[in-house]
Image (cartoon, rainbow, N blue to C red):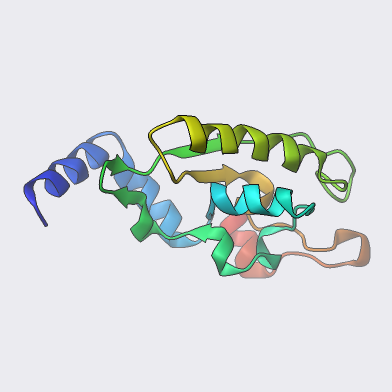
Length: 142
């Protein structure tokens, strides 16, 4: 590890990054790639719960370290629009994607990690039809 990478890691850990790493590596939550969210919205998509997303949607913990420093993390939560789905028509997805696209375009960061509760935390996949989190997912959710 080079001197600059070592200094970034030291600063990251001094500011609580080590705690963040352990929670991320536990699988309790996942970070979503902002570019993936923008692409999903452009395609007219609707949010899917975490367990239904492909691995291309997520950012690995190895990606959190970038040449310019630590990868920024955007944290958001939106109100659920229905009892069974937070955004059944994709309207919140489109608004969030527009903001993320602006950040990606007009900031020095070309990549952003996103913690969005519905996408980042294990959900009950289909509660209306009895589809619930597994016991392991439920333990991580708590």
